[in-house]
Length: 258
Figure: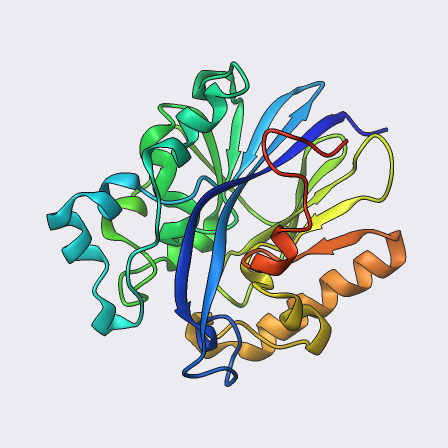
């Protein structure tokens, strides 16, 4: 039986970029606007955050912005205001980051791990393969965000965080990318694809993300197919991660799914 009681998608920023970053060999020259999301899961065993968004300072400090977000390298800075920082988002619910028990990172790219700087010493779960293969040759890894900290727990492969929340291995976009299974107290389970599938198009057409670890597009497609098989077998809903049209169909924070 699941321990999940409530589930919130949280919009932490938006990012405008070339669609080919999300869809391999598709959409070059077409600009899209993508949500950058974190997900808060309340369970009987504590609260879990899947991803934490960006480092606000790198976006809004001019010197940091120039260092980390050079449009000539493929993308500019996301749009993020003070109210979208996770401590301020949680405050809307009467919570602080100290009320979060575990942060589960799908991978270490800047728009998923950067917000750790706002999260204190909360326990962080990350895959061994992800940390081992994160490097600044991939411009989406930021040097000061991929350094192991004392509160990081290195995990290997799939495991249950709590009853009803399971880590699913979906490498391809990065070496240690993980998706997340969430079994709600009622209705269909939800599978958060993470960046295994940015857009609904990635899922329907089985298109790899545009940026794959060591050009492993076949591995990325295999992970999409794995998630689709699981969703079909368990009658679960498979959610893309950076699809603005899809995100607009969801309950808007602080409304929640249950």
